[in-house]
Amino acid sequence: MKKNDMSTLAENWDKLSPEKRRQIRFDHLQDSVNSIKFINPLAKQHYKLSLKRLIDVYCVREPDRVPVSVVPGVIPLLQDGIDYNIALHDPRRALSASLKFNAKYSEILDTFSLPFLIAAKAMEKLNYKLYSWPGYGLPLNGTGIQFVEGEYMKEDEYDALIKNPSDFWMRTYLPRIFGVFEPFRNVRALSDIIEFPIQLAPLAKPDIQHSLKKLIEAGEEYAIYLQVNEEFNLKARENGFPALSPVNGYTKAPFDAFGDTLRGTMGIMKDMFRQPDKLLEALDKMADLEIESVLSSPDAVNGFKLFFALHKGADGWMSQKQFDTFYWPSLKKVMDACINEGFILNLFVEGSFNTRLESFLDFPKGSLHLWFDQTDIVRAKKLLGEKLCIEGNIPSSLLVTGSSADVKKYCRKLIEECGAGGGYILGCGAAIANPKLENLVAMVEAAKEYGVY
Image (cartoon, rainbow, N blue to C red):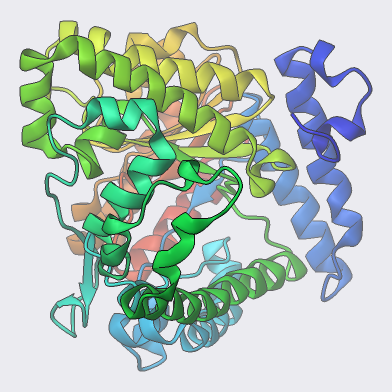
């Protein structure tokens, strides 16, 4: 940790145990209640109760009742007469629609929600190539965001990334995923500058100047996106709702960083057989880069929770031997470093991890919040439930097509099988674009009826 961050709240931070550091982060979170301007005393009371419930669950203690993670998707937008395309390109309208929805339903849904948004206008100005969304590669009436996989790093470029990651990003990778960075391919490495900056001569070129102007325009749009998120978070707190899954930083399994957006699925599958040693060296380097990035982030240093999305380690994607060799060691290196700093790690365990569950046994109590998609959550509870917080895995199909009675029955069964001893959050297996509103209400009703300790 650096000066002027969480470590200033305790002397000898470097000598504290991870558990003590985590407790200091919780204390800081609870102390922040005094700085919130609640709309009324009831909102303050609700906030403190909800926050204690979450901390109890993360620490694998029995709270007053099972908390519920409700994701309304685009329902707030549709109720306000706008579609996802409009919301992405006008985040202030999305905020307005969300605040109206929350004012109407937050009491019965037990949460305060904002639809998942990206800074679409900013990304369009950058000519971003990794995603498609409504109005940008997808139909205007679409409701989701689609990843565009490709081989954005070539098989012979591992050494370039390992030797000088920043230079590889600036002059090789970014020009491939952002059209606006295309002219930077021909700029000399910034590390060539020693005293007289003749290497900055490309700044005089029209194409570089055009790119820099586009970057400024994108920054202005991104500022609006950040302001909307900040205003929403403020409104949520003032109305008495701490975020159910507040995250202060985001990273990935190093293998996924390569397999998703660098080498791609086909590329990294071949690399495991054709150049395994080079891949392992790169994975270790990526782990170091992620650790430095996360632990030095201004948003993370004073927070308490980090988000990981696990992709290619799922059942069936690779053998157990490959998982133990290529996927797990570098991921665990990142996780251990973050846990050591007192963070709770929120892992979105996508797909099924039934054959990988034992890997989580090594982590200390209260260090992980595992959000399961299709994993057998009853088995996960039996195996991990005494030391780790678990969430999920209500099927998306049930929330979209099922009846409220079916949802309530399913939730009751989950609570009875996974709720004992605390450490369980009732939630869906994955974020859903357009669930039935009555099914979300049924989730909360089930927790209030059957999840009280």
